[in-house]
Image (cartoon, rainbow, N blue to C red; front, side):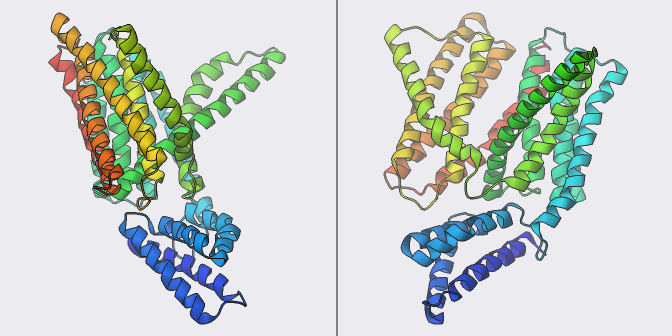
Length: 453
């Protein structure tokens, strides 16, 4: 059975549940129920054409029906919890969600254990400290990609492509003989995880990376995964504190065990566990990342605007040392993240609103800051020449400038009613390939290009 047919059968089951609820109402005749069902199906069809999943389209259509019809409102309210449970684990036809979860838990544990074992293997060979700096993303993301290949029932072709890309990453991390103080070590440690995370995205989408919808699904997954991973790490910190305190109380000092076993094994296993939690518990009704986006978008917009005003008022240039470059690039990435997760949860058919204008303001502020950073980087390169750090920062900021500039243009077109919002979503998902390509350039080409400096 194909994924599309599975989605169709799931949608029909949801509509059947809605229809059965309507038919139980004594005040509603069969003809009225049929008319309401036609109206619901029409709304679902419009939302699917706009690019939504069938299950997402059903929920949104029911909620919109609720705003017009009290009976649908009651159905949406009374059945929201049940619908959430059905949608977060969309198993095969006739397979209960709980049974699917029980079947997946052992495999999740297996991949998490493999990750924990893998991170300790280099210790047996007395690996250098820099080895972990450049290779940590390989140990973390290979098991995660394997988990998704298993979960998506991917074929040998996709598994081979993913394995080959990870092998290229391993070559980029280890083939070059770099000094301990080499700039290339830092650049590889930053850019290799980005390149390999998008390889995980290939496994996540089941190889269908050309699908804009699946790329946006991976973006949603990334935000939710980051939140779950941080929560697991916070819980792990509490566990470590209790472990240290209780064993110290009886005269045993577990610091070596905590440092060399508990932290690395637990942290690397948490990468897989967090992914499983997202897959098992995420809600298409209200994910955490879009909710946090609503909170932090106005805060970041005010902060960036205040920074621009201060920079203009004081006429102070931006210091472009390595730490400052990393800080500003992280700031711009956060802005893009806020934009992406707002897009991921937005109704594509809704009209422009106040929050859309606020996002445009945030993008414009980030665009201006990026231009200031580029001016500072260009000045430093003109005066002192190219270095690996400045070259990487120059390329990244040019890439971010292009994304922000075109996003602002699309936002303006949408707010003026000249283009659909879907154009902005499609642009953001397609632009992921640019980040992917640049990350590989920095990892594979920069070290020999700059004589392994």
